Figure 1 (cartoon, one colour):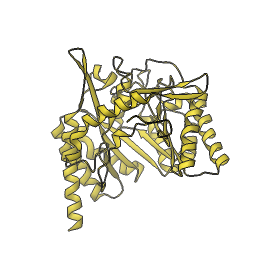
Figure 2: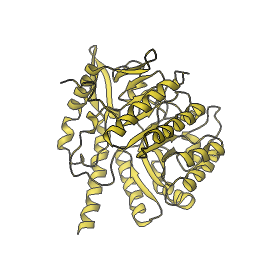
Figure 3: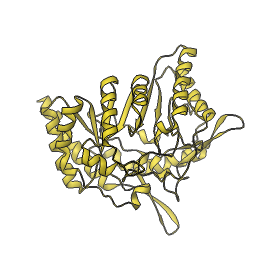
Length: 368
């Protein structure tokens, strides 16, 4: 049964302000093919729609800046939309909201300080070790980025209590996971760190950089996590798993996100939005500049949900499902005999099951 307009009431919105970026990360999935910026009226409409839904339902409003480019490049748009959100909070006398940003940290320190003071949370893409950061995440001009990101990471960790680092693991640093935590512990104290495995999707599929062997990654991650348990000055998580299991299995992949791209389209899969051949498969709406409203394709929403339901049906009986974060972004698309075929990355599942089993053993020991 298709959703009606009244039933689609998101209280969270993700704004992709631009596809432009000041870095040339070797593992980035984005082609950075567009030079457009999100229209400010479109951004305000998206914020207003989700915010008023939050007010009427008395649910938490969540605004996230994330996507295929670096949001701080659109600095004027970023600051204006943050201030607009605050103005809505005052207008409706509603303070149950949060504003988060995912950033590469390549910016002047005055901008870093503004983010630290105005964001509820900061997710910094930072590979922590100098050599690895400079290999993985060079600037557009091929200059090193470690020094500037290190300085801004200091600002974030000192002035924003909800800062975390996301570190991508490739063949270059798979054997240096404990070393990464040791360095972070020494320089950044208790900042939570999320290790994320490289996935060859989008533009990354054409680049000369590769994920580590899955067995080796699991072994080294568990060693790093055991270091974390002993050293309480660092916190470590795996990006695909919750730290603690949910009591009930969640069909979170069936709740389509309200994610707005720079062209005003609404998509349900950031990774596949960068696959030029399949980018419209997960598109289910767009902003209409004539009436300043979003037009939702409810039939398309149901088709996307049907794809997700079929792909994730086996997950309901998986031993790892209570920990698992995997969702639409983990769906891979290929064309077989002129027909689109969808699948879930099995290597990712294998890794999640192994680490999930390790998590379960920790919980069992705590209970005993």
